[in-house]
Image (cartoon, rainbow, N blue to C red; front, side, top):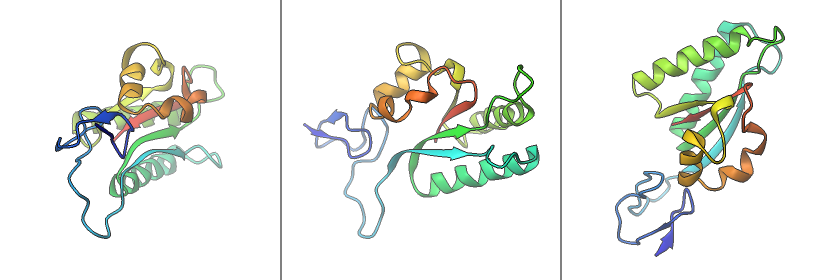
Length: 148
C-alpha cells in the first residue's frame, strides 16, 4: 500500500487508477506535471460585470483542467441584496450546464458543502486535504466547489 500522489488516500500499488480520486496511477511521462488537488479562483474581485465574471470563470476552469487541478473553489460572492447576486446565480446556471454536458464532474453549492454529510463528505473522502484547505468554504453561499 502506498499513498495516492493526488489525494493522499492509501492505494494498492499495482492499481491503474486511484479508487478515491480517479487519478491514473501509471508512471508519468517525462516532463509531465503531477495533478494538483485544489485551487482557489476569485471571479468577484474588482466587482466585474456578470459577463466578465463568467468569462473569467470559464477561462480559469479551462486552465485548471489543462493543469490537472482536481477541485476549484470558485469565489463568486453572495451579493449585497440579501438573496444572492447575479454573478452567483448566473455562475451556478453555467456550472449546472457544464455538469450536464460532462465538461466538469460536479459543482457543489457552498451552502450545501458540509463536512459530515452529503456531497461535501464524499468529496472530503476523495480529497482529505480539502478539510484543511476549505475550512471557510463550509456552508458558505458565496462559493461553489467545482470538481473537474
